[in-house]
Length: 492
Ligand SMILES: Nc1ncnc2c1ncn2[C@@H]1O[C@H](COP(=O)(O)OP(=O)(O)OP(=O)(O)O)[C@@H](O)[C@H]1O
Ligand SMILES: O=P(O)(O)OC[C@H]1O[C@H](OP(=O)(O)OP(=O)(O)O)[C@H](O)[C@@H]1O
Ligand SMILES: O=C(O)c1cccnc1
Image (cartoon, rainbow, N blue to C red; front, side):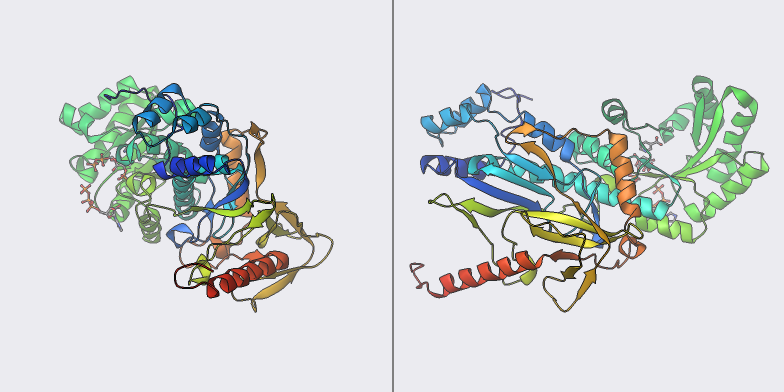
């Protein structure tokens, strides 16, 4: 890349408007005022019943390196948009805020905070874009992966998407998110090296084209590898591919580990059944059938319905690009800010659409599970100074349709947001990837099947505490009365 500046930091990985706002806060003397922002999404992706939170590891890396380098400052100066004084302020900028977030692999739902940033206005505003960028993508892919895992049952699922991903970062972090969401392995070697994700690979049609026939190609591969999965659909799966795979497996015997064959085209229900027969008849009942070709949760479900004899599913494009919904749409909103008298004031963003009205105040999300079966009853979003009393009855009600309500007893309440940074210092130890993956699987196990089905799932309750609900209504009233007193020139 030809550039005047080295790409030596991620600090400017932000929208210009964040830096512009921080200059305003600085010039106006309010940059150090205390604020709380929360990151949340309004709608679950893919019409799914839950989302799998991912991205925290990269958020932590990003926050730890957040400092303006000389080249960042030189670049900002070259835009002629920022004062000398402001650039000096940025030179000494250090993130001193507190971040609370869901743990990676935890289940998260719409209209509840997944990440909360508390600190100076400057701290909070500067990190908005990067946090959204990271969490939006990784949570989306982890959720898509979980959907695919849910229909694949115990079959193997392999992430094959690198060649179709929206560039290299997406391939790498998408693969990691897919692993958290339930994939078994990836074809991306770099992800294997960096994250320790198991890698898996067969071969492409080019190998067969190079040797011009299935037999010579499979034989050459078998002589150079112990584990063999042969791609059998280059010319004719049933008449050439599979018979030649069997021939090589027999001739090589114990010299290779004949894992199976991969099919990548055609009617995969019909073909896989015939392939299974051929392999079984040849004495290879343990050889597995791998399939790939634009797969996703819908085609996998459909192929299973047709009785396809597929054991391992390779999924690329539709997973890594979140093909049917390419963005999660999470937002980052100011919920509380210090006023000129040093008092915290909770803030709201109104909308004519009730679902879009933000919920003011610094919050905590409590996951309510029944002691008897460990299953989730719903999430209880409360002000941060509240704590559901596990010894008594908890009244939970829908925040818009309050007649939908229930009382829960004998429950555990787990805070979903945990402290990651405290006053700028990382206090949370990032878990191993394997632990995160297991945590995601455990959380999914605690969710009723009704919320997990891939089509028209039940809506999981995300309720507000009575105190938070009352607080929100009061602030809506205050804002309405302020607006109704305004004259048309916007002055009161
Ligand atoms: N029995 C089946 N039922 C439903 N969908 C299937 C079935 N078999 C294959 N598919 C899916 O249908 C789509 C077929 O796509 P396409 O027509 O491009 O494949 P193809 O012609 O068989 O292969 P290619 O064009 O790659 O040589 C793929 O998404 C594939 O996963
Ligand atoms: O289909 P996806 O889910 O994206 O999985 C990855 C695809 O990449 C490979 O082939 P490639 O697409 O490069 O070539 P091909 O379609 O001609 O086989 C592989 O054979 C899969 O089909
Ligand atoms: O290993 C494979 O079979 C593979 C890897 C990436 C993309 N398609 C297939």
